[in-house]
Picture (cartoon, rainbow, N blue to C red):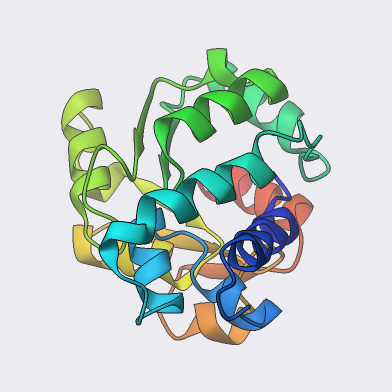
Amino acid sequence: MDSASVIVLSIQAACRDLHLPVPSDAAASHVIGLGLPEAIAALLPDLAPSEYARFTESYRHHFLGENREIPLFDGVADAIKSLREAGYLLAVATGKGRRGLDHALQYSGLGEFFHASRCADECFSKPHPQMLLELMEELGVPAKQTLMIGDTSHDLQMANNAGVAALAAGYGAHPVENLAVHSPLACFDNFSDLHCWLVGNA
C-alpha cells in the first residue's frame, strides 16, 4: 500500500498533539518499517518511555481513526492474486501492529491471499530477523527459497540478518540510494518492473 505519506503525516500530527518537536518528512520517513516504540525512540530520544502510550494512541487516532483510504500501488492486487494462484506461499512481515495490519488487509481485500503474517507487536522490531525466521518455520520454507520484498533499509537489513535474498522497492518509503547499499538482488522504481522480475525469476 502507498502508505508512506500517511504514516509521515500521522507521526507529525501526534507530535503536535503532544507538543513535541515535529520531525521533518525525511526523518519521519526513515523510521517507517520499525516497530512504533523503536520509531518513537529514534525520533524522540528525550521522550520518557512512560509517554510512549500517549504518543501511540495519538498516532493511531490519526492513522486509523480517520478511516483514510490508502491506495494500493498499481497492479499489486492482481499480482498478489496471480502469485497465490501460481502456488507461491505469501507472507507479511511488517512494522505495523496487528491492529494496523488487520485493518490494511481488510480494507484492501487481500487478506485471503496471505498464508501467514508477523507484526512488530508480536516479534522483535526490524532489522532483527525474528519475523522472517518465524514465518519460514511456520510455512516450512528454507532461507534459500525465501524472498523478502521491502521498501525500507530496515526490511533489507532484516533479510540480510535472516540469510534471505531481497528485492528493493524504490518507489516506497526510503530512497533508492539507501536501499542499494544493502545488496538486494535488484532495485525497482515501480511495481510493474518488480512484478516482471518475479514472473521471470521467482
